[in-house]
Image 1 (cartoon, rainbow, N blue to C red):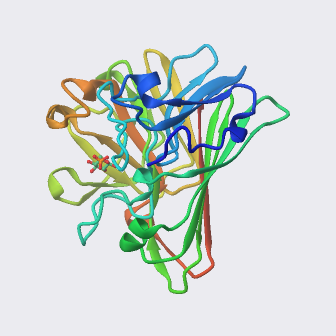
Image 2 (cartoon, rainbow, N blue to C red):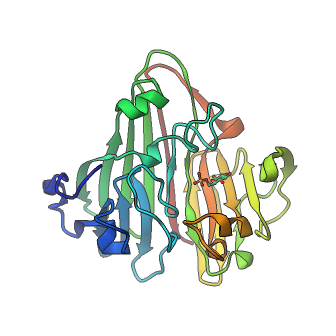
Length: 301
Ligand SMILES: O=P(O)(O)OC[C@H]1O[C@@H](O)[C@H](O)[C@@H](O)[C@@H]1O
């Protein structure tokens, strides 16, 4: 496990960037996981090194755009409930029973660099390379890199460099949990006219999205070949999502979430997941040496 003392403090010698423990910030048990806290005049964010996982992003003067479960558990090897888990290098369940959504979200990433940009934003570079546990799940050489830019907007830029010598199937997603005052009053735009696969209950039926989407029950839909921009309108204002990925998964477990210990009773009312990525029919195959590069930007609309 990564400990605070193992962290190279020289990387935190950038104004407004500090390393804290999950115990300190969120009251989780023990020391918890190391978190990078980023604060500048434009916005602030909190990033867990496990999974290169954003757990908070606030444009200056605004509410958090991300939902973090009040019952989130910060345990090594367990995905954190909320924020932006990275689903990588596969999405959803695995046919051989390997961990859902890939291994990247449960692995300790390395913080390679932190810098302040001339425009006042803060930029962080993180990476993940194979280790024994990962190679047992994905026997290929790779370099995953995430660049996080925190300003009035949040940008995540993912590069997956396939350094193995055989082609590999590949999917990824920015599994963003957006904070909403009440999910039933949120409206998602930017999916109209696209085809989605409805996966609720295990059936995979195809439909066309007619009009804006309002979540009114258990929802688990994979939208394919979507436009670059979606927005989520709530009583608090609208959030804009920009990405060059091709899919958007919309997920809310509804009351089934009451059985999920790290969501808890009525937790589902406070978030909606809109997950930009390349999944299902939009999944790829990476050739030896190929680099996959995609990004997502979140901002107030
Ligand atoms: O509990 P997990 O592994 O984080 O997954 C949560 C959900 O993630 C979504 O992306 C999937 O579409 C859902 O089917 C899944 O239930």
